Length: 166
Length: 394
Image (cartoon, rainbow over all chains, first blue to last red; front, side, top):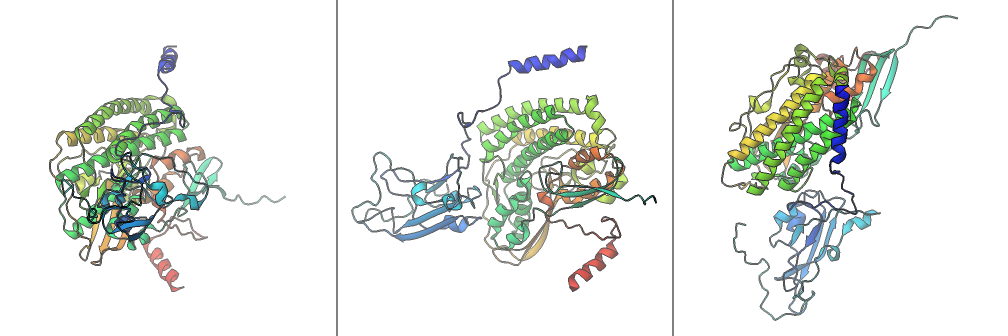
């Protein structure tokens, strides 16, 4: 009799407990700060794209998921600081393994793995995320790209970092 | 009517869903309810990872090899990184080695708790399955906070680790471990005292010390039979020389002993993690690794949650590995399943199968050859050698 009551006590106790179930998708579990979700391409505050089309991410990618094609910047049509910008930037999300190595390889901190984990597609073509889908929106004080700028201002493709070892 | 000769009755199980949710094919010869012989067939999940590693650069191959197994992914990357660093004569800073061990032990917690859930589920004890998987979320969250992913952490890079441990994460881990330790106490109590559950584990699948030595059982499976073997103790790698591990063995060798050994390893892992967080070495977490690794070959051994994991790495001096050979712990333990299965009831097979913590994706490099006149496992070295010669003549 006693073991039975003890068993029922456990049942009673767990009735008072809060359920551990998270009713996704209505309720979302916050992800950790280091979470590696879908990539985004960042912009500078003036609206210029951080990506300079160097394709170091594509070279580093262990899964060959990234395809980058670069084109020349001009001061009339400027997408990013420096000589070149990425005219095509595609990530195949079916190939991507979310290791974050592109993030480490990027010299301008343009590509960052953010916290979006809701990736679903109905066919293989949809799995290829283009540059338009990956780019962050233009910040409030910035202008959309391509911008027309003064010549000789944006000559450095890699910005000067405060801590070069960082 | 003439009475016909009694024939062998074979129960095929798999490749779809043989007790575990991974593909593997088993054939049990039964006499009534009692199993008289067992054969296994694997390779349904062959992905060609070893060959794939040869076409990728050293760092890319590490990410690929991390995906050999979804549960013990960090140890695969560690084994490869340690081997590549040995070849390149790179000394990894002590803090990086400590973080490698830290993630490795957290992964051991996660792997053993996952196994506990699966194994008790096979016994029909679904309450404990739910409990252990709920509590496993704690360690999964810790790993997510530490590395960014719940599985395939990508914590390693060649020449160090990618992630550092700050004070907040340290506190989170310590808090999580406190809960886990209490829960592990509870699991130990349940699996050693619950009468119904002991009926499924006590005296089932017993493997003696001699059998374990003969069949080359590794990891907790071997240690439950009294085999005093653990790479972390015998040949300490990474930060294990500074954080010594206590060997946990049992002498009974049955399923109960395997439960006890694995749960006691949870306590040991918790102790090691606390010690590392307490005496974390300071300094850098990465050193520079050359893109080209000098010519040479090496063996790298680490202790995965399931047992000894062995990597053979050969470099021809290029920016790609020349050959990578992976020998996973599950591969060594299959012999013990097929041998101990004999004499047990067919209903005990799922428990005996899951008792070694099998990983089928680790077995994609196993080939079991069957001859019509003999049982599959009765192959001596000489006949295997002759078969190999014949096979390659064609």
